[in-house]
Length: 160
Image (cartoon, rainbow, N blue to C red):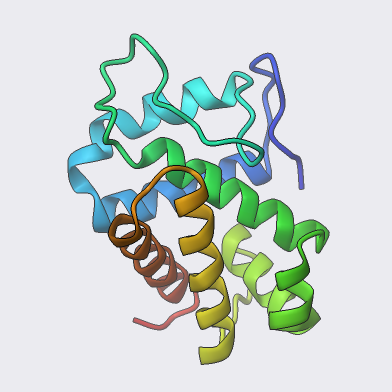
């Protein structure tokens, strides 16, 4: 699975999966942002650091500063990297290797994708909310994002 690359290099793998999952979340929870989502994703793909610092909407794109798309993509990129590498403590300690594999399968649409159990969903939700707050969203918006991400993962796992 490829990681985000600088300089607009073409990638398959993680970037594309993060964008596809992000688009599913935006369509379900933030439909008014669908028009700008692809522009934000393309701009961020051109080399912005995603998981290491809070993102601001790219200048000159006509993106409302209250848009959640930049934070959503940063949070999903962080989650994907943590899931694939196991580099974040919560991933291994809270959901374990089996849960991490299930989450990776859901995020990358590997077949067969098995839904997360309730404890795993709770841990992923908490991490998404915390990461969204680190990226500048208030608690309410971060919780909305967490619920939307869990909803998208449930759909990918065949649950609603």
